[in-house]
Length: 372
Image (cartoon, rainbow, N blue to C red; front, side, top):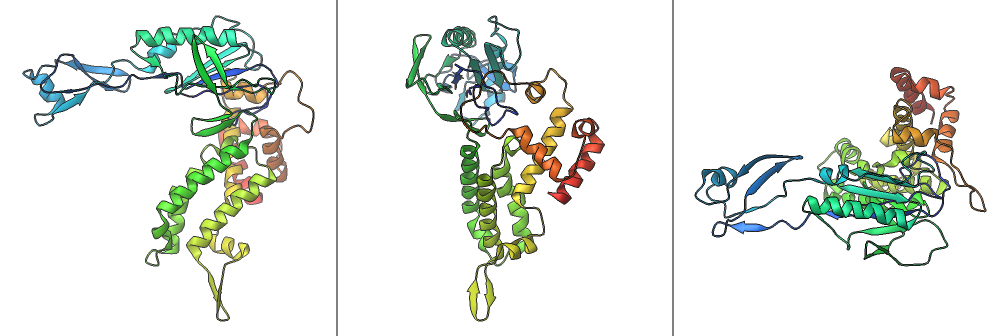
């Protein structure tokens, strides 16, 4: 499971910064119990076949029953017992009764679950403790338990120096960042942490294909396709929510040029080999650089969010007005301000009106692609 905190700094998945205080988060809350392996000689329990969230059929667990052979096959020596319930049963049983009203910006507690990721956002420890007790009670009903080793918490204020927190008579370690839905969330909202993690993952993918990318038996066209379909998607995953600083732009472009130089190789000139210049690389590449692609992905996401219903969380964040006071110093660049700067550069006006029409927004994306 994972957790994230909402407060003075926005997480990478947010669209605007919120300046609330005293927010704590719990991550990695519920984990399935270890499956038990049984053999043909000791079959005592019923075996359940779980597909999705439904238990399709229960098979008797005795060797003499044809149902067991139908499930396992005659030559299979064992079977793993799969729990007949899912985390959905746990998440649906948790009810937030503390300050259920308010907005997404000022609500006392928020509880989110996506697949097997459970997140608690709270402005005080007592509220979080109550919600955690509800989760534990529902988990016990489903035969699950809380894994304290994988459960962490994040606190986004500077006035707390503790390394642990005690909730429901259990100590949980404090972390400064963690991975949530494939993205790195930092307590100070530093997007560079996520960008560096994605680039490191892209380098691992590039290294795995190193022989392929260096091979002279494979055409450049094929290598470019490999880069666009396998390596590049690793780096740009979740980039729709990034706020791009000049430093981030330089790092991303430098990484892509490293890949292109591996694909196109050096240039032989006047009896010497030299690396290709940036201009030569993009002339051969004949496509947008990675930063332009990320900006276009952000515009696609902006149009998608603008067309959402008003009760959807991304739409509420897009239109919300943060409360509270910012810290002393220069305000951080907000996601929406960064995207609007791209629209201004492309000469696009009335984007909120045009985003409501899907076909019109497709024309906007084509305009932006030509001008960014």
